[in-house]
Length: 254
View 1: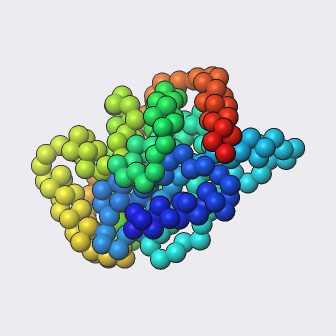
View 2: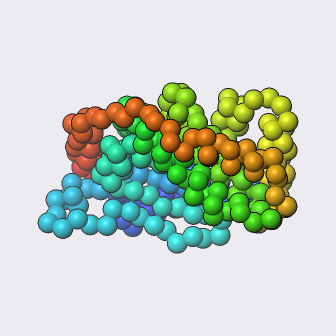
């Protein structure tokens, strides 16, 4: 699959006249709870030529490839990515620190440093907490629940707690979040058992509700509804500088 992904990224560069700066896994495979039939969720950031940016009207700043088999691949233009980074969108940070990297250029280390510098605890917390609350309401209300949906709630819920406790940027791997934040005991054992079942089952596998995990999620959401965190602000000068240098470098390589 890695070879197919590399081939697809090369075709994207050729067909769209862009340079891919990095590409990584963003879904359950990167989070550490993939099923045998999980998709490959590949996300990337690319830079266009200088002329592409020098237009009267903004052009489309995403590239989306139709899903083919188990491969789901799409990406953002660098200017869009930096704008989201400036507003502390945690999604880009997740892509950058994914344990599964398919392509990485020399500019990625600096981009990762900038992403961490612009991380806002208050925005990061509300991003993850809102995701956990939305997924809980959307996926865990029935008597029968798909295994993977528990982790679509547990992971952002634990990521929000990680941020709230002042630990900084949450790790991608669910196991690290759980080991750090779920005390040893029956609940941790039950979550580990659910994780084992999920990873050997198909994406659509389900069971009756797991009451203790459901109650833990409910109680944690209620307890943290009004959490307060410090808000940090940074100007965009460093991002502007990185953007200009990266676009110029693309022109020199053409």
